[in-house]
Image (spheres, rainbow, N blue to C red):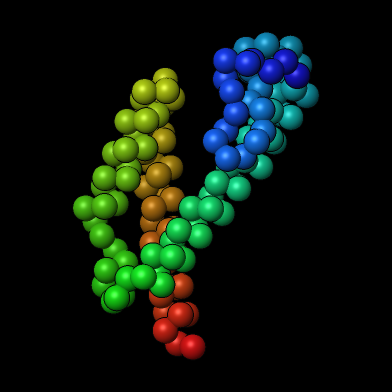
Length: 116
């Protein structure tokens, strides 16, 4: 795979990003997607660690769901997608699902921490 030096690295992950424009085979595409998936899972694991911290820090269960913050996070993701030339509506939809899953996870963690 050709590595585009302008693309750089993902912050904190240490993996070189590939240049899909240089791919000539589906094997390269699949290898690139597989590498990105590994990196995305690592980032999601880190994000969920932040949800665990929030569950530990928030004083009451009702504070877990914050609709204003949810809207802000989704809008930020959509704006960043647009800035990067990615499909903003698709990204916003994915973030809606991610935030809802994060809220459910945080609520479960909140309950788990207080039932011990």
